[in-house]
Length: 359
Image 1 (tube, rainbow, N blue to C red):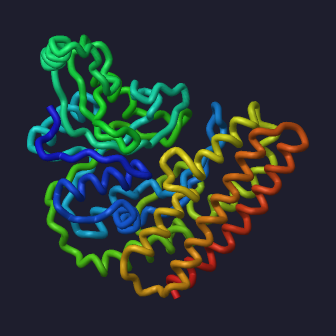
Image 2: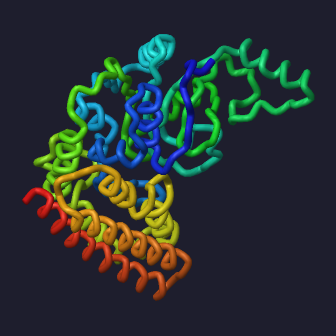
């Protein structure tokens, strides 16, 4: 059964929605944009894949969820790389203790998405689990009431053990066989951002850093990371090109996408990574804009206004990519060139913004 008193709600981005749901559960009182900003959530990671769609990027850094806890001084535990049996035993123990567990997964293996595209890391919360007899009891009760539907994508109720997931994309908690979560939590490099049984859990929910200090710490950490990932407070790993270097790598690479096996799909996927797939709009810049509009910060109104303008410009670049993906030949090539120019200009604008924050 799900953790008592846990309230599931949807949101704009998987990671910041999961943090917002934890905020509701533990009584921190933050909305989603505030969670995103306090997590140093703005970033950029550009990478190549050996398989379709061959190129991808995220407008957030890999450490978003971890940074939230560290910036606020909240006690947490993080594990990664364990064998599945060990990881699942620990996840169940945390759930039994009443603590939701934040996990990272590939949506390809989560039955309720019904997708044939690998996409990771998707952050979501494990908020319960149940065995086959509990599922069968639900099914029998539903049939007694004349409703044979179980909902939630949980399968046919014969897989042994099921996990209850709080996923930002769906209005109700979802149920999948534990084996599906096991597959989803192991992502090799050829399928997406690599991870193996990574999860985080709150160990001490007390906020020990004043929020106004955390706002400054998080915002300035974002600026440093974007300007030079080697100067980042949090480890970024070796996968992909990060920060403004990643934005400029995307801009330089875009015109050459016509040589890829399926340039239209690669371009469409890029549009989705700007405006859809849980970005909150404008390659995650929309969430940072709303964070700066929500909290009191020491950087001045001009910073907030420029973040809003950059968000709009990313949305425009995404629209250019969308239109290019619907063309072919010379039209596709021209669209990619236009998107390249727009993204290169955005890199310059963002650089100026981050330097003004640090100055």
